[in-house]
Amino acid sequence: MMIQPQPDRLIERICQSIEKTVLPAMKPSNEQRSLKGALWALRDLASRLGARQELLAAEVADMRQVLAAHAPELLGTTNPGGSLEDQHLWLQSQLQALDTSAQAGAVSGDARARHTARELRSLYKRMLDRELEGATLMKALASINASL
Image (cartoon, rainbow, N blue to C red):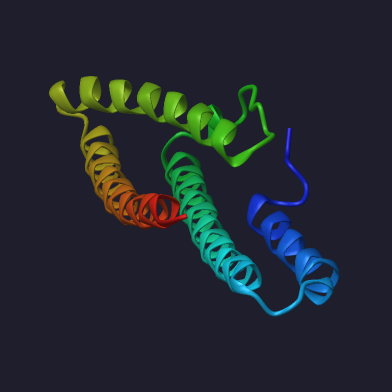
């Protein structure tokens, strides 16, 4: 199931609606300045949510690419589709199956399995790098939330 519109776009639309309907009806006051500040914070939050989705989309694409190169048959099994989060979880299980097979083959001396294992380690490194970037975003979101 895909949420439409995406959360970042939904937040932006809410902000636009408040600016068009609520702010013009308010007299200049501390409350109006506070509302403008809250709208700014919400827009900042929305931009960070969008960035998080971009990181997840990049990771899903990266995982699919590695699976397509080393075990395309695993991509042909039942895929839940739906949200990026659902796809990410499903792809992780497929990568786990590939990793198990590659490790067993590498131990027995299979050169192709060793190559696959190296490619998986490279993928895991990229995934960790993206996770670190995502954690930085989440800290920023928590900071914004604490300031509201």
